[in-house]
Length: 226
Image (cartoon, rainbow, N blue to C red; front, side, top):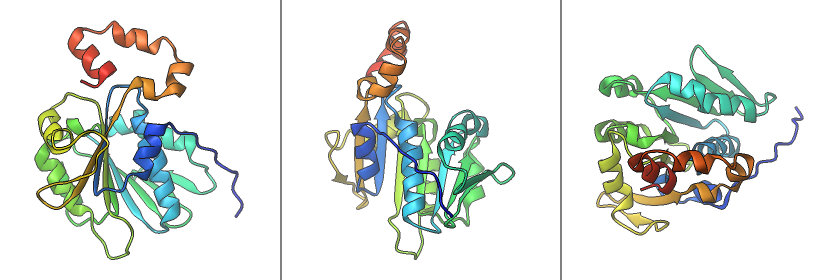
């Protein structure tokens, strides 16, 4: 089957996220840095590169998925090779790859993935998750197919998981540097700023002004990734 070509243009920071060679990658920082779009593009490319692969992308609630990531995939992915099944919350590719959309609204919701196996798990807004949720879910990254196994996350500052995420990804090494944790896992933190995303700044030049109008705490977090 022939499909129409798909031309994807990404920022330098998004490209760094796509190319990241670490077990755990965090693409974090200010709002508007293109983090969620980077996740979707990365998931698409992985699914095509590794036929029959399985990925899971997570938010805390399913409505959050519907209003953001699911809409983006439906608008971006060619229908000739991708279909979304709303009952199972699953995206399927023509080459057999699967992209599950999951959520963990309650602490124990992680156990719905107890017997699952994934090549990649993706957390969107990682700081909305607790550390026990994260540690349990990354144990579901496993398999014998030889495909690269990754945990790739994106987030803004703040939220219930802010402290543990900062401790795990930000504090141990300078941004952009791959380091090895005490558990032997290679990790990488890639900071994102609004200024890194020229597509949004050019398409919505007033967005920066709206962020500047926020109270100081929210402004520092969402504009400067502080």
